[in-house]
Image (cartoon, rainbow over all chains, first blue to last red; front, side):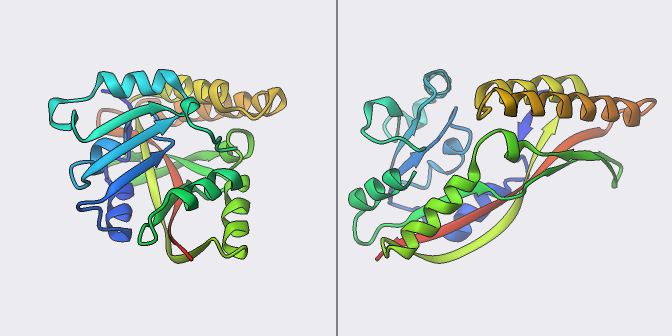
Amino acid sequence: MAITVDPENSETGALFDMADLRGLHVLEIGCGDGRLTWRYADKAAHVTAIDPAAKQIALAREHMTDLFQDRIEFRDIVILSWSLC
Amino acid sequence: MVHALEEIRRLLKPTGMLIDIHPVAVSSPVEIHQGGKIDRVGQLSIRQWCVDYQQADNALTEIAQRGLFAVERARQFDSLTHYPSVAEMRTSLLEAIDKFARDVQSAGEGAPQVEALAARADELMQGTVSGVELIVRERTQISRLRPT
């Protein structure tokens, strides 16, 4: 058995309660390994997901399925001109 | 953080929205769940020594005060992390400290707390059979903000 984060889907439940993502272009900042990204990306038109941790982004890219190839773009935040702290 | 939010404001379409999700609790309960019964192992003060979420709170307050964004809605929920064993919880939390600790002092305060929680969890789980879950409950806030 592996460590599971939010198998109850409380986070996605709260997210969908806050916003209807259908057809929207989403910029997710601090996506980590894409844990949350996978859970909502099918609703959005396109997702650009960024994180400063290159290893986490590499993991996210590794787990990318064909279904999301054209929909999600994972990027290392260092290419962008701002920092989160 | 404020700079990042200013950039987001600049990039957002006028009809766009900003959804902020971040933990709010100062400490997170660590629990053992078995057959509907919940035993408290203790409290994990990860917020104090890992990521400075206070900075995120302050930045959101500042951008709202400066009129860049308005908070339309906010609510809180519990996000649960399930660990298959005490050992995996211990390893995962110690790795989190290594990765996110604000400084050496914070890391030094965090590690003994994790060790104490792991020891207590081990003690409470002695003799338990299958169907036991070790859970860290993190209180989290989600807010929807609109550019103003």
